[in-house]
Image (cartoon, one colour):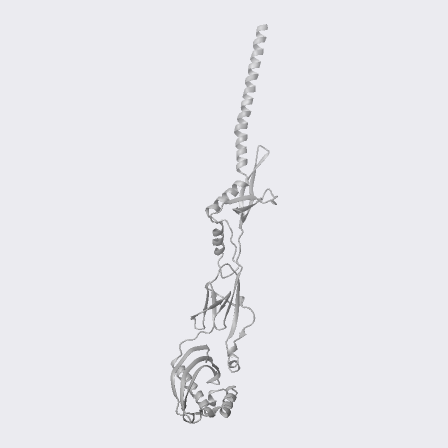
Length: 366
């Protein structure tokens, strides 16, 4: 009987030891297997790994996740900011760190740097969650937004052109959105404005440009005209063209006839129809005839040379100007001398009551 009890006791302890060893083995397996696996899953599900993917893309030059907003000027494409951003981070090391004021565990915020320069803010959000071992919460993350940090355009230009001209910046026409102030009068049209509609100067301003733009100006006929650049101001003046044959002939004839008034070879009365009835030129002619005409008394028939018409500008259907130059030579017997008078004037013609009249004359003699 005693031997039977001893055998039973030995069997119990053997079973107990085996049970304990199995239990220990189970927990070792559980801890090294299941728990470790869950911990690995938990670790891999941290938002920092999502940020590493974001950084890798940026480092590789893939900026598709970034939203480059509409440019600050309608004359430039937002792509210009993307290009500037690419140039700014080229060759630099991209890193990230969590925003110090990011307290929302479901939507952490990270800051991205290129070397020491702050280049982007990334918002990440949790899109799903599940429990592991009843104590760990594993979340799935996605990038909510990647906001690049870059300088927008801060350059500005001014364009001044006649109101009959058009201007474009980088191929995009300016319009009333860029107009600044009221139209200005041109000083050279001060007299002509009393008889016809004359051009005015318009000023356009464009702000928010990222780089020096391409500015093109065209006249009323659509021809490109030259632009003068001074600082950030682009100016286009009236562009002259070849003088039509009929206008060249009449302009030269009228200029010579006006010159004949000064020489006493033609009366003022015979030329009154070339000027408006209230022209400021009439009193000037009369004053000259009454006081200075004697200088050319007793001269031989004049001869003309170096005749030229140029710089024809048609401002509108009722107003144009043309330059006329020539050398007039006269021999004065009483003074035994030859007089050479060089004329170089701009004549402004306006259509008044159906007739082209000289409304102003401006000397261009140096």
